[in-house]
Image (cartoon, rainbow, N blue to C red; front, side, top):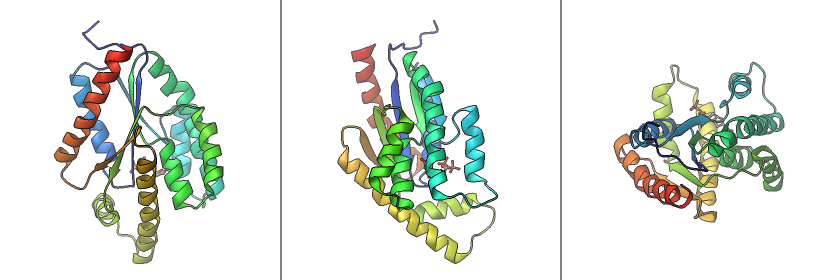
Amino acid sequence: MSGAKQMDQGIFITFEGIDGSGKSTQLRLLASDLRLRGYNLVTTREPGGTPLGAKLRELLLNADEQVDPLAELLLYAADRAQHVRTLVRPALATGHIVLSDRYADSTVAYQGAGRLFPPELVADVVRIGTDGLNPHLTLILDVPVAMAHARLRCRREKREDDRLEREEMEFHARVRDAYKRIAANEPDRVRLVDASSSVEETHARIMEIVLPFVEARSRTIG
Ligand code: TYD
């Protein structure tokens, strides 16, 4: 083998944060850094980590009709079930580190706090969709909503109207607060990372958390 570090069971790490928090960029940087250090990695995302998921993602994010919030909640769960059972679990079983751009905390934050579904209903749907698989480590990239929106504005081609933008900011403020509550409630699994400075500084913060975690776990299970 090419000197790759092998583990009997993998490590499941998820990235979370509001839209425009920079998680996809940070996930890419972390992945290339860990690969350089010899770890076997799988990078994936929700929605859309599997072929079925890619179709669901298209349906969810580019629908030509209004997606009902309950249908949306269930489609995210369906995407997750397919993802967990056909991709994430098998990759963990063969000793990979799996980095996922979003997972179940997105449903708690977006559908629970954002769309205001009752917490018990969201918890039930999450339990079914995850099939009992919890991440070993979750990084929540935290940025002020106004900063995330400024980043998104640069990415988007056309400017949205002010009312839509205001509504979206209120929605994301609720989502951000929910993420902070998740971090406060589950300090063993979840780390809140300040992602308001440069890409390099945030990457350095993430490496400070992930490297010792991965090294410690590889020693215990490897
Ligand atoms: P994301 O892939 O982060 O968007 P992009 O990479 O295009 O910036 O997320 C897509 C959207 O899906 C995002 O607005 C959050 C939403 N989402 C939920 O509302 N609930 C969920 O359970 C998941 C996984 C995503």
